[in-house]
Image (cartoon, rainbow, N blue to C red; front, side, top):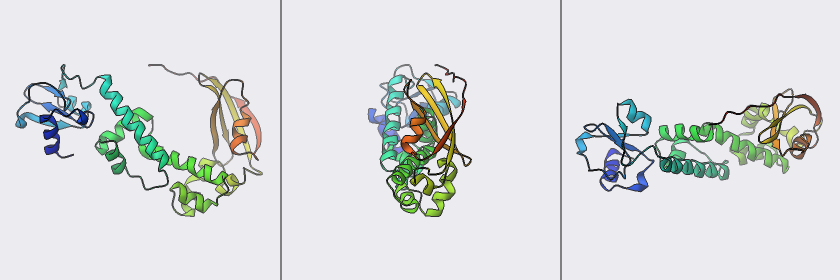
Length: 245
């Protein structure tokens, strides 16, 4: 969005632009949402920012009238990120760029990437890769060849599938498609606040990371998606601790 369009949104006090950018008023030393009801400043005294951090770096403070840091605005940003996540899940096989995803969230690429990581815990690129891995696994379990499954999942050529996912499957795509026949896996379990957590690995890498309700057999998690593995209990991991707040 150009500065001209941003200024137009400010003059109209456009609430739909909240979360897309902030504007700072140099003379008063505050930064506001586009919909701020305060008196309209002179254009020459206004600067635009992607986020509050950038505005505060210039020595500005949050406006007390529109409260740009309120939970309402944060909730809107979170919902935009969730919408993008759902889009990625549904279109993992397509070409997904940072620019196209940030436009879908109505944010600048820089602001989108930082907000996405704050909300989800990983970068957009990592989320896209994870979504493609889920699609790949699903297609392989359906019996597709590694090449066809790779194309459908968005990995491109068959060689790229083997280059990029071998260690993340814990086996070759062909072995995964065959249900892990003849592949040995070691797994470890732990009780967590979310239930029983299981991590399984082969000599190639991590093959499974899943959680189950308390009382459920952990070995059944891996066998449901990789039914022909030869599994053995490695150890019981110490109970995880979670920080709150």
